Length: 293
Image 1 (spheres, rainbow, N blue to C red):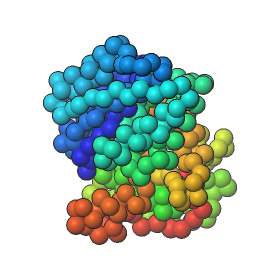
Image 2 (image 1 turned 90 degrees about the vertical axis):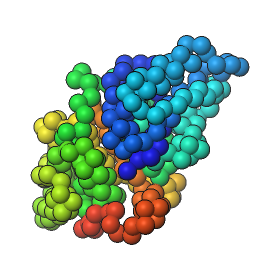
Image 3 (image 1 turned 135 degrees about the vertical axis):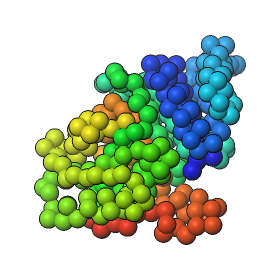
């Protein structure tokens, strides 16, 4: 359950359809939304246009019944926008960060993937990446979760289960590997069994990776008609300070649908301590294979 959502916004085509999705998450979890825009022009004071952008987003959330507030932060050219967002998330004690930004193909998509990756690398909480697509955002009726038997994909399963229980979603687990190992079917079966034990409607498949793992995940999401893709991802200190795995970066860049990068293990433990629950209840059991995310 989310209590505070940090919603990092920019003025582009991803924003209008992203607002209803953030509002839906907030209402479902009774969460407060902190809207943030990072002004990057290096001006000494707030740009009135940017101030109005934040105000407009807050007012749209209010009209949906969401408790929301807004903030504009000014940075100098060359400052790290991702670090500003991550710092704001920590300051506001956010337990979900939503990033809505330019999502067209080419450099725009690569920039979004890079920003989302660096925001997630600086946090332990889940990061919801909202890109514009031709079809807009369709809610969360169908959720695809990528699994590979690793601990990080176990966290993705736990996150997908929480989304499904909140929204009544159907979840499809996909394992993409090349060459396909003998126990790939066991990875999927275990993932589906975990979801069904949580009373989530679930199916699964093993998919090929002729064009790479990320492309395989995106193709599976398209085939399933997923409204949301959930990925586990390794973060510091798990990679000794490196950024997220290339698969997560590529999926964010390629997928024309929202991508939820699951929370990391320390955040799961902290959240469950606050609820009085043991850590083991929050994570899925996993076969230990080579991590992919």
